[in-house]
Amino acid sequence: MLVNNPSGRIAVGIEFLITSFIIVVSPGTGVVYTLATGLARGGRASIAAAFGCTIGIVPHIAAAIGGLAAILHASALAFHTFKYVGVAYLLYMAWNALREKGSLNIEKKAEAGSTARVAMTAILINVLNPKLSIFFLAFLPQFIDPGEPHPVSRMLTLSSVFMLMTFIVFVGYGLFAASVRDQVVARPRILTWMRRSFAAAFMALGVKLALADR
Image (cartoon, rainbow, N blue to C red):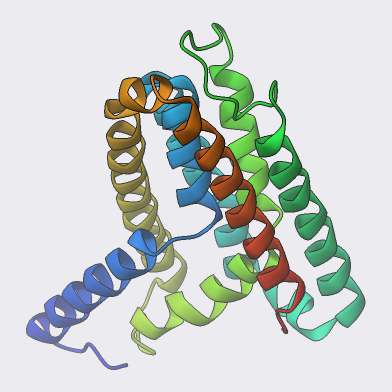
């Protein structure tokens, strides 16, 4: 993708923003967890979840820039080991969503002092997904001019924009979920349906990751 002139660079920048936005708003593990946290624990916890999901992107960006993603792509053992750890964690999240006292249990009074744990869970959800490393390895270079004098700096800039967009969008998802939390808590049948829905979503994402190829 050549961007040897200012107008071309602007066009590529706009294309990057549009593509990134579509990717960020698409349902995935981070979106599901942030929505679930907003419903289960309220706005503050949902922001922690959004922050954790965003931080969980950092290792994958580092892997893509450092070439570690290429190792995952080339080594079947490394990729599948990483992948099935991620699958196991998603299935654990599904089981946890179904538990009456699980971390995604929706109660009238959100548990205090749990934002750090929420953020750590969100980080793990994104870290334990090898497809993200390979995604960034394939995604970022498309927006780097082959003649770019500082490609690493350019990739870091684009990655920072992607992460900022992720945080903003996820906060929006989480705060929306938190805004309807009272209505959900007041209806026990909806609570049961929501727990089952989130469990099913985590299971589906786990199966999708299990079936993913390099």
